[in-house]
Length: 229
Image 1 (tube, one colour):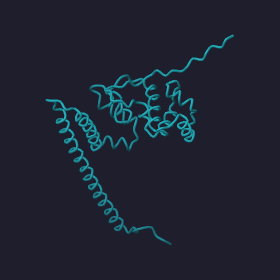
Image 2: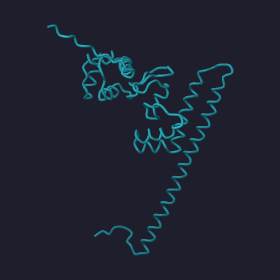
Image 3: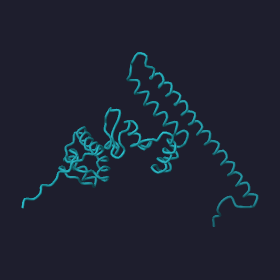
Image 4: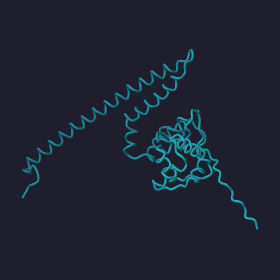
């Protein structure tokens, strides 16, 4: 009986294809062969044979989470650099999420915002995205007025740089984006200065509290420090 030929795996979902393309792109940009990359992966504790690396690049082998993080680490990029295309296109398709604006997809992959926002629910969805997806310290920084001002500066500067490439008669977007970026920077400066003011006020109140504790302790005859036998 003739054995049934084995069906060749073919990755067809968009994000799987992005991973395949990006692994090959970055490997070739670094001047590595598939054998070089396989050797580095083995040294990193996640061995993938050269033939398997070639299959990954041809979208003929699935990449699990461990493979993805190992590939990103060895290639010297973030996991997002493998998951999304390095493209100037306006839109990108992501497996399970559909089509989104390229800058929105990158912001999502970099932990800045949800993949998509529902009109009228943006604030709630952003807070939940940070609550469930970010460590407390990072979340506090993002939700602080200074952190929000910093995010606004980044967005406005990105728009400014994009519009700086357009030189069209009657197009005022660059001037409008320039004004917006300057206002955002002024707001960021104001919020940073407010952090300094709040810190100094907190330090002053803490100093008063400590002095009061020491004063009350002395009135009660408490020793200034631990006794030494």
